[in-house]
Image 1 (tube, rainbow, N blue to C red):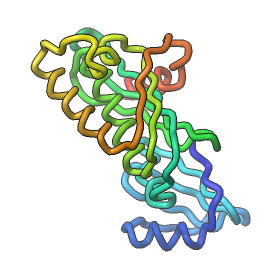
Image 2 (spheres, helix red, strand yellow):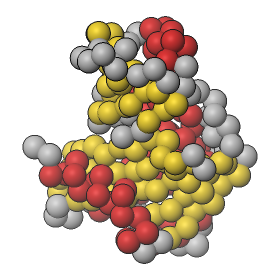
Image 3 (tube, helix red, strand yellow):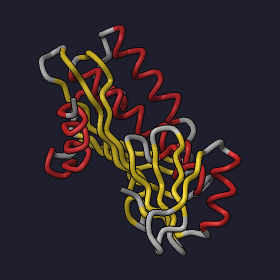
Length: 198
């Protein structure tokens, strides 16, 4: 749940221009509520608290073109292989969590879900306008294929790899590192929560 310290009047103007819907706050401390896409924001005097399945629907509007470096964590999950699948991802800057999310993606293999998770975190980072990204995931296959150490023989994974490489060109600098699952625990948790939600 991202918390954005910002000028909430400016945030409201940006959200209005993006087509958000608004309602009054529910207490004396809440100034207003906003809904845009799959995100919901509550405005206080000097901050927005953003919730929902896709917080970047709001956070990217309120804080566009942040620039700088961000860390991206990603994980895909599936029950069966193939089976019902989901993705989880987190963007973290020096100021803390910028955005995070988890969602179902339909039926997929575990490797397809991992690629979708990587694509999703990259798309979010591009929306925010970051210049550099340091990516971390616990799929050795995806990391090695994207970096070119392993061949991508599966045609569908090859297409996903091409999309990832296109997104990476949006950044001035990037890195992609394989990490143990425990280092990637938040992305893993978000992917599994999305899969567990009925």
